[in-house]
Length: 291
Image (cartoon, rainbow, N blue to C red; front, side, top):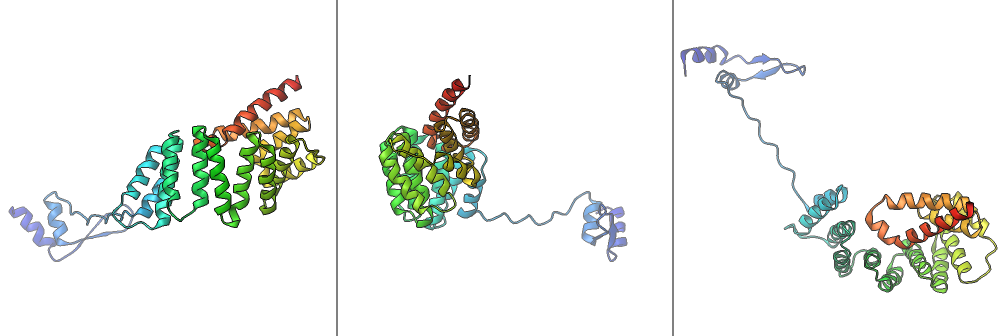
């Protein structure tokens, strides 16, 4: 140590120094810090402890991912984690991987992941719904219908109306109106807050099956006043308006439905591909009526 540094260290060896600390009050310097400062060195603080990476943390990252690639990366890391996975965490990680495949339109891979989910005992009705959506992407509509039938049987009561309604909607778009009436009538019996949507769908299915339906206007009014009249409800409202020969209303609701759906996730677009095709066709027809 040079004589100059030795003098400076001795001068401050027993007296801490106060140094400016950018507006946060004085910072106390110990003799060692003074010496390091004299030598032009900085004292390193202890490194921050890295966050423990757990399957649950990776699941959260996958859920919040902005791209399908990032979603798949975190889901695969979670599934390959060394820690034992409980059934629920495993299924949720698989579902994130499934969504990544759906977003990439890799429907065969998505179906394979859904089938892995079906091998567990967790959320089997959700896995059936996911398998059905992958089948719809592959054009295998009969397989999709079978998955939806099973899903409606194994689902808890709180989700049964949703599964029955989904089944009825697919049957309706397939032109199997009598079968659609059966599924939608059961959905209406199980339904609570979304019952106006299920009843409106049932009215359309009965009409398509050749039955006389006299309360279409009432069904439209009830659905338009309900929260379930948004989203998918706009498609049903558009169909009701078309049946009632309200061409302007049909165009307004169906265009709103198309805008909402086609700007959403690919998985949603795939599952609603039949509705998208039908909505576009009805918009063209109703627009011609307005001319």
